[in-house]
Length: 362
Ligand code: SF4
Ligand code: SF4
Image (cartoon, rainbow, N blue to C red; front, side):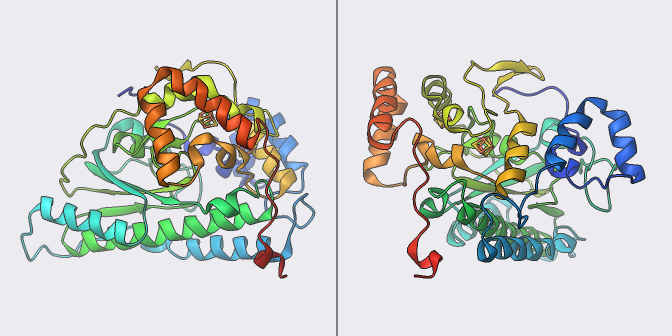
């Protein structure tokens, strides 16, 4: 498992940068510290913005629904962490872990894994909210990562309005499960913190990768063996000594990404590279151009999701597609054939699917 050197400063991610209020002290200080970010940020600020009524794919119901759900997720922020209860019973950590795994899956997650935490899992500095500028790392030795599925029909409309509604919906589902699990662990007498939308201290894709849930693909996000990148991730960190998940080898997904490149070809902002992985912070990886991607979001008004929707790994988790995934895993020749087949059946640059009829109100 490749281990990045250093930590990500959360202040530098687009979700933090978009919160900087022009003219404020925080805004001025940020661009003094990162002068290279000023121009690309002025560019995205010149566009209508995410969930804005003047954006290209504005839909009053979808945008208001997404906005309402994301606001509801914020209501969980005050309870992501807290003091643990007095430990009254001595249930073995292994038993707790087994029950937690079952509970998370019962709540609708696609996959769950456990890992030890490493320094590179943590952001260096908190980039948003009241704790802006504070150190992010907590003395939590272990983490639980899980994924929830983004609905395929909604994602296939990407980059149109239903995608952002579905994103918000799954952020909410992940937040409910993660907050619940953190609370359960605290009730059992251990420290635990949920990491949910708008309130992360960790880099979820790296934690999820190390918990055995997938690999970091060409889009720079987690690719799961079940449904590729069509997931949202949440994490719970804790000092409960969880048994570690068995190491899984997902390197075939990297090999497939090397050949496929579909996400790079469909991306409307050319944010995804067609080149091979580069050395970034001591590891070989792909990294998207976050400024280009986010600027497109500000034009579209949605969080786009075109790359996620068209990825050949994003097809449904059913017998047919699982057979294809198994062949991709095991055969170098089939990987090339699978790319050609996917292009033949779905197109190299698939058009967005129509918005579901019920959603159109017909
Ligand atoms: S679209 Fe292809 S290259 Fe991109 S993440 Fe999916 S499998 Fe990898
Ligand atoms: S979300 Fe859209 S703009 Fe961003 S990388 Fe994916 S396809 Fe490109």
